[in-house]
Image 1 (cartoon, rainbow, N blue to C red):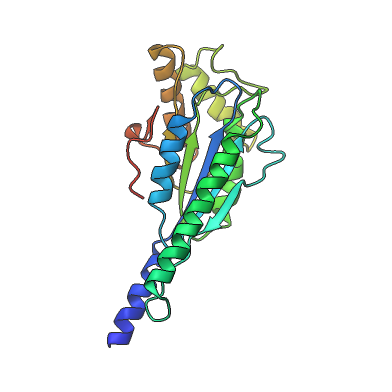
Image 2 (image 1 turned 60 degrees about the vertical axis):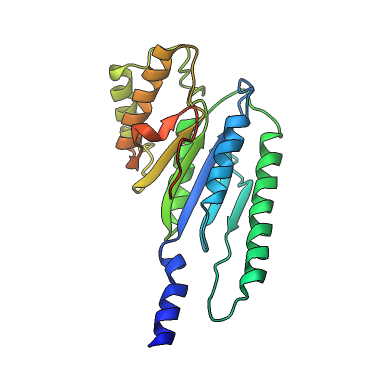
Length: 227
């Protein structure tokens, strides 16, 4: 009975494991990455055994040339076979590697475009191939600037939002995020009216895309991350 109980605890991490997919906006217009660094540290601090974390870049080639900058699975602790001190050392090494890769990513080449919408199609592909619970994080100002849309120049009102969602649905380009919990850190604009306008768009869009984005999880900083 004791062995069964211990084995049950050992398997708990796997049963509750999550896939954390983060996209970082590397548009040339982004000047301050400190908020991204703070958000990333919170994310890494909340990674548990058997969690998988994937980091991709948002740029003008996210959909056509996606490459994961980070794709790591956090080692799980097995009570019957692992030494606790050795495991903690391995865990620290894994998280340090993830932190280093993130620093290298944001120091890398910048992009002229921000294609968030097509990045979400990549998210669907990754989540569909996973059994872990999906969590999506966007480190971005959320100002779409792709070949079709420039949120800084157009009025992102309710009519625009409905039309865009319907167009994506008809063309079968509306991502299905499979109920993923969504967080946004870095959201900004030239003024409060534009920021609120863009926020309303993304709240509606993620709902249509079967993503779970709460208003409190959207903002210039990652206020909390309790996954």
